[in-house]
Length: 131
Image: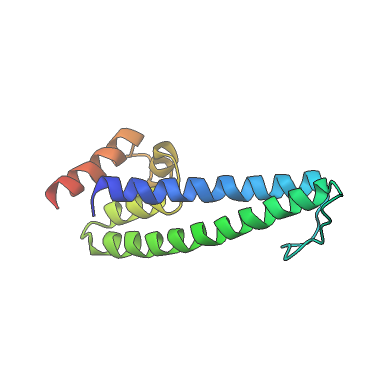
């Protein structure tokens, strides 16, 4: 696995979180309380703004399901890759960065006082270069 593949998984997580936020915002603004909308009756002569919003929410829900599947597959691949690393520090860095989506600063904080954001990044890059 290359850094580009790991970063792609990180980006998928970011896209999914953005989609979750957008879906919640749409529901809040439209007053939609249901978890999902299956259909809305519509007439050709009636402007149904709530129906249009509900349809957009349903489309977004479908996109979210597709993103969730991609994220799940990506997370499995990243975990398998991380588990092959002999160094437990590298395993943790990979999982915390590319699955938990933590910042380099937060990862360093979790690993302990001997680590900095730069040293965590260097450990990962060094490992990937050896692969």
